[in-house]
Image 1 (cartoon, rainbow, N blue to C red):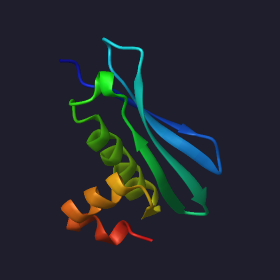
Image 2 (spheres, helix red, strand yellow):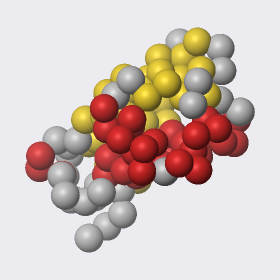
Image 3 (cartoon, helix red, strand yellow):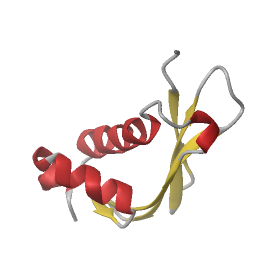
Image 4 (cartoon, rainbow, N blue to C red):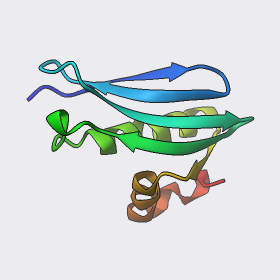
Length: 96
């Protein structure tokens, strides 16, 4: 199984992380809204045809890595992102 390719689509006040896999046209998404240096993670969506590959977790990891690199804070409005923050207390300093 190929690793998904994660890309960040930044459109200023909003954006998303996309995960694509080589064997399928479907892609996973983690959407957010930006206000200053705070990103509100709104939704994490992974279509069933590419599910079971850990894609949602990799989308959250990309968001967290960028937040750490750029000094952003995160509001985990999305239930999946909120659950990931509970599993990773070391990310607590990123919470807005």
